Image 1 (cartoon, rainbow over the protein chains, first blue to last red):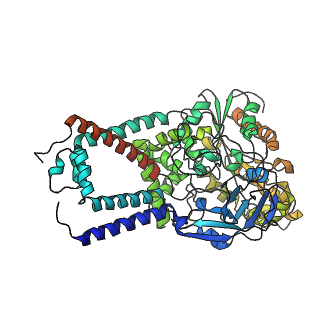
Image 2 (tube, helix red, strand yellow):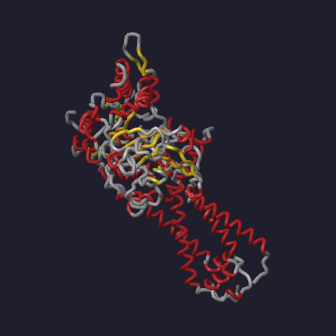
Image 3 (cartoon, one colour):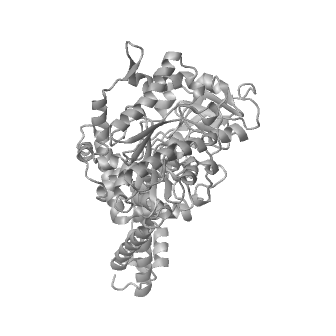
Length: 582
Length: 46
């Protein structure tokens, strides 16, 4: 036994304890009091068992921006007892109650644990936001450092000698040795590195096989729990396989890839409008819904259109657009909600799947050199991830494992399922969410601002009482044509300009209502003038066809299918693919 | 080092290979996890 000075041992012991405490604190931050409490006040009923309260502005700031603040880690307490079901859907909170809740940066939607009214039951409701919620890599790093510190502590102690004696018979005779030396003695470098390489190669091979498999074959759409909101980021290959799994090259492919509106948010899977569109169009066509919440055409629709253009010679691409507004190629924004879908475009770019589009190439290159460090770093990271994905097919493999076997990312979305439950076992249950009159009255200021921004402010009244788009047609055409410079491709893209719920439009004055209707109808004309196919959708739909201000309900699905199918038939006939009458 | 009695070479080799395989799978998983955004995507329609 070597002679040890007590001071270094104490120093090492202190460091190991401090690191362990830090790691433990980061892992169980609430127990250390590292949390911020935000009282829920001015609770108002919304509909059914759901109540709502707006949160102070500082709450939004608290849950955004900084790396260590995480909205999904916030929880709601009822009289200091946590309610059981976080992150439920609005419909579930409304109907089932039982303490289900959902926290957003500006408000909380919740129900009491026993069905009583939170505005009258006298209980205190508080939101707890854990501070210092560390990302997984930091936790792994701190715990590893902590473990290493303990290894250093014990390496000169008797227990290390016993461990060595167990692992390496005979080595106890040595005067001095370290645990690390023991480990190095035990493991042979060549077999170890052969093992590492072999595992990487095998995982990559399996990942590439997964890339060619239609992992999500039993789904009609990428609902919340198999989309980025559920920590699932389907790769470009996953999306391509999803299309191939449903459509053969002989079909006329109808690829619907837009935002939550074409996705069918507000519609149950059994009443999904794209399924009815398939029925409406018949077996010559194959409708595939690749929409994602908040997704824009340049991120998913256009890369997929390019990637599949050779395979599907007869294809029509459908997306939704806001009036007179061409989205940028990249939509990364600094703010509460980082736009998550740019990765598909970057993967297509790195894979060489994109068709020639000088404006898009310039936008991608510019973002890599942007003077805005957030944009530049985001884009560079996206390229690195896309390159690593191309080499290792890691997302393809772990997406498949997460869907079929066990999910590996902690995302508490479903109170009835463990987070590691394979996503294939989770049902696409998105029941309709009828809006109450109270909710409409309360949400009106927000919705009015949204209507002004997206519709009313994009047209101007003329002296003769008519309206004109704010952006001249030629200027708008030039901007939107950059999305698809090939006129033949533009003719195959159908852009839907969707209306808003009449429940809200009815609250506009007559002049504003005219202005709104003009914006919807005329912007479709402007998109057509730019060479795209485009129709306004939902202008004449009744209130019950909307499940909220912007999403269509189950009742609207047949009407949507009929309206869109007529335009798709017209396009197919124009291309000479069919001879049927639209 | 020369006088020490170690586990049989075959066992040490097999053990090294298994540990290497585990580390390789972990590395592959890390490539996947590092590709996920730190901040979750929360989409809310108001």
